[in-house]
Image 1 (tube, rainbow, N blue to C red):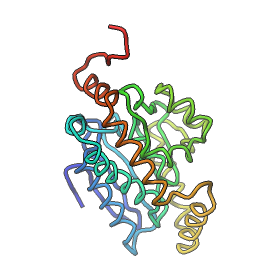
Image 2 (cartoon, one colour):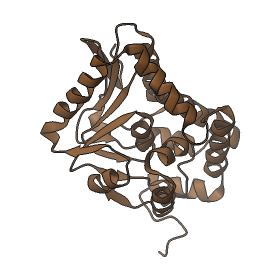
Image 3 (cartoon, rainbow, N blue to C red):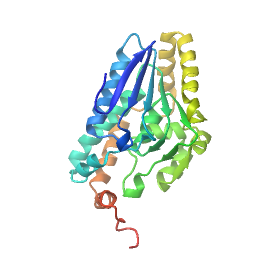
Image 4 (cartoon, one colour):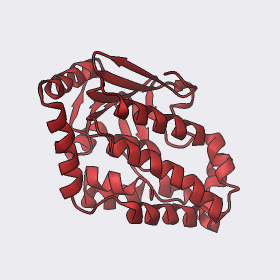
Length: 262
């Protein structure tokens, strides 16, 4: 499977989904979201797939929202933002609930919505040079739709800091707070991924699926339709607010937002 945004290759029971638009730092749009959703649905349904690896080309893993998509969103009404956010929420849910083990192979920087991609995977390994950032507040928005997954991945205490500050943090910090499981030199990423895959392949396939369901069922608050709806409403409201619109327009036009001194 090859689309504008990604490739899906299955080899020896492993499905590798690779984000393939390095020229825009693998940022996603509504079209990309649909393609990622379908890729994970396809991999999850295939009987010959035992695990799924999410990888990316270029210096960045995923920079969040594509600028052209953001320009369209900047003109959306609240209702249009709700519909738009719901598509992102569905993609995240499909990744998180994929019946196969999922691994994020993070070779470069991860920003905003890209943090949700990593958080939704069962395991994550990052290059030691990768940077991470929940940058939404810098443009007057909030990481609402990705929040159920990111908070689970890094914990509430770290989320308080990085959601509110929007500051960039290192791969070492991402490892310390539990957002990624291991950090290694870039050339060792595949070795770590291969090692994890060997564990999956040596285990009972149905047991692995059952263990994944078990973790989801018992870990903290259930990510259900009600919680997802809350996050969709949250981002739709703030995107349509005057501050949200000002922040996005300032970002797109490369100027300071009106809450910063000239």
